[in-house]
Length: 327
Image (cartoon, rainbow, N blue to C red; front, side, top):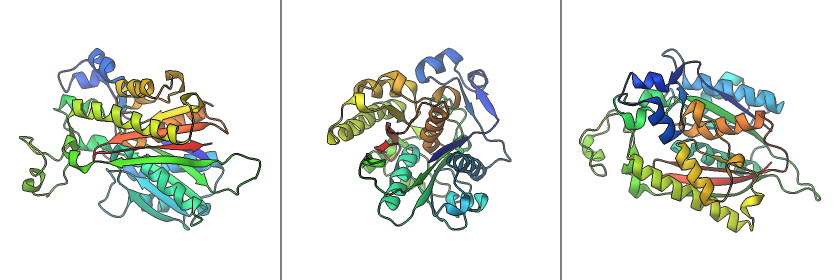
């Protein structure tokens, strides 16, 4: 029904990164495609970002807050251990009739939340859903770790879904198919421990010398796993639905790294002009990256009724998956 997004005003450019770690603009751009990223100010919150993105999505959809009966939040960096971010959004927009909860799929969180929300609508439990993803990921960065701190930024994105009656002569719209995968045996490839978790527990799967409460990932391993995981997931859905890549109007991938996105596009035979991007201006915003890119493309008029849109993401967990939507 509608999309919305919101990012903090604070901008961190590659030139700013040069002052923090041994890197430079050319090195970052050629290896990641990132030019700048957004960063929350000390007095800004993830919940406020999420709420603003939700308001914009409701406005775009011409839906009143009281019409929302389900809110699914996707975040790993909510302001509280509890209550969930979705509850804060519910209060913030005045969605007094909504059930609200969060899901943790890391960078694949929006895809997981989109599938969850869609299934609640398809089975008749709810009629109108708000899916909102938001991350304050910069608050979990080690700004001495060049491999990770250059990649991430903060932001939020949201979509409004509504169940509609099937019409005999109109193709089915909404969630067509999905493919969700997890491999907990590779959890050590990317992780962030909570404060207070015993180091002996983390040592059961990590061989890192120094354990810190910051994002850590094996960049090379994540790159390979992301390319393989997302491309195979997309191709499974295309094959299962008896489609050709030419019938996918838009691919909206997780914005982790431009090289990853280009490699996935090549493997699924979807050309660059049909791939939604926002990595240059926002970097990797974890769960928020897909709805940020989708809202950008939607507001540019690049999404129209009847389009087949493929969402795909890869994350720590390891967790990954794809969802095919008919607009």
